Image (cartoon, rainbow, N blue to C red; front, side, top):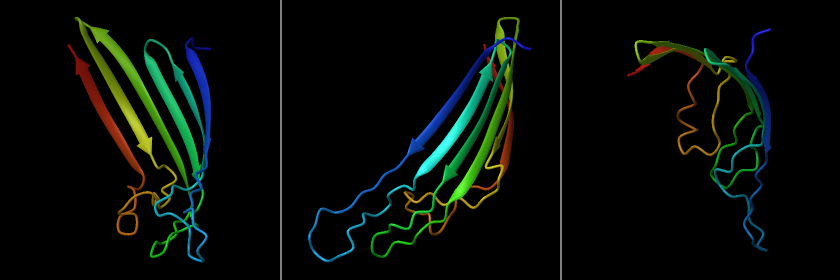
Length: 131
């Protein structure tokens, strides 16, 4: 087994916000984020850096007046990076994969969520040189 550091992280967050009013009106505030639950795995050593993240976002139906609800979605992402050193330079080659589930993601807190969802499945490949 390769040596290195291994980390596991979990996250959960819930936001519930209402107007403090006794009037018989819709007391929900606008653009309150949906509840989220997630986990990530991270492993690295001197040459490699690997991340895998899973995020489950609930639907948001507690909406303010004139605000549309958003559906829930799942998000799977990964990142792998290889580090090289030569002649006093540091070189990193990387590959990132984002929204691998290709779910339509509309972040409820976004002001443009009704017009433009977050990007779909995508990959990034690159090199970084430090000298």
